[in-house]
Image (cartoon, rainbow, N blue to C red; front, side, top):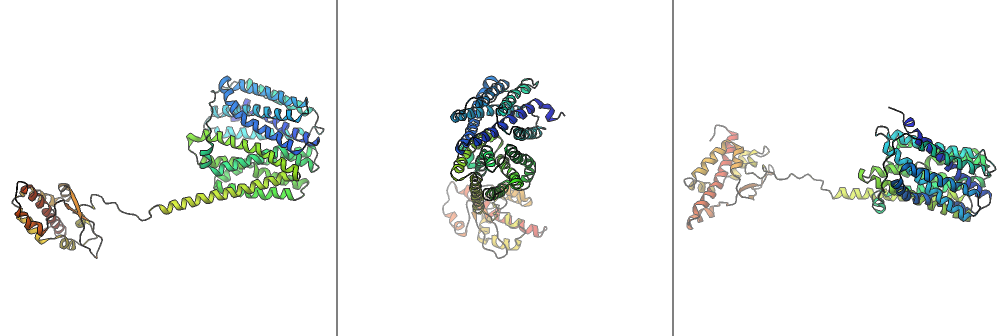
Length: 531
């Protein structure tokens, strides 16, 4: 079987070049604005506009791909992104830059959708995991390469913008020349925001806050590093170390999440991340200490999203996962749009260190929210378990409700059953009707020789009359025919003789013969030779 990198080499090559240009553009704009003394709110607004463009592109991309196909959508989007990136060199008006970032975000989402849907459709089920792992590796490598390339342009002139335009233009070539089969058009995925917020509140809360943390980091971390006295090359190293840590942590964190409950791992991750970013905000870290701190930040911050996504898919059925994916992307986009705005406002009011102060507040909110939801879910399960009946109750079946149950029960003394079930007046009444119910008595004698046939022969409408209390065991209720013969009814029966007397007498005889039958069956079990 061919390697995934060889099978999808054209798509992976386009991804690498495209993400390289995207990462280079994001850091370049942040450093340029910070060098020119632009307020932090504008820098955060640029990043928010980009992520808002990603949200808009999720809708535009579906319509474009359904109308003109994957390759045409990719080529058109790449052309628009290239022109928008180069337009930053033509003007310094910040409002136009905001619009350009919005257009770039929309086009980038369309390109992402082309690549990911293409991979998802044509990846073999046996290689799907390897294919998407390779896609994530290539994406992270492109982001790290974009930060590294920026270190060769310390003056931040027009050369980085020209290189960005070249990258967006070249990413068209591999996918335009691919020999792979063109995938089927996409269909819009439904959004079910409120139902999923009720089903997977921990996952969507984590994704929302993870979007706020990631968006604020990519947009404002270069400005934070530059304010600490770092040069362009050092800022590039700072960003590269963080992104590389996120790449290296994906596989170990995934293996760890298979052994530890993901909800517990998310709480632990958010608590550690909160402590770390609070330390970065309060302590005057410099040089290698800051690089180590941001490396640990990348491990914790960039694993929140995949952990939350895995937890959400774990608790959702297969038919709902397409709608869940659309909801996750929208939730992340909303968080990434709002995060840079809030963080940049705090940085402008209270200083650049408030970037990580904002992140510490986000982690605190996330931890409290996860702990509360987890507590509520445990209490709900406990209450549900307490409402369930814990005692096992035996349902009454045919054997329990049968008149032969007491005689067949090994826990009951047969002689005791005989004494309790024996009714002398009823027995004498039974002998009175022997002549009138001869066929019934013959059938009962035949049943006495076979207990199973006896149970079938007495399937008339019954009513339950409990036996007398016993100290030896709990005896099941004995069912007798609906006409119960007592000494009073036996003596009163001859006083009213009409046309229906004969059938009633037969029923009464059947009832008494069933009791005699039970007595003889019990005696026969004790002594096979006794009649």
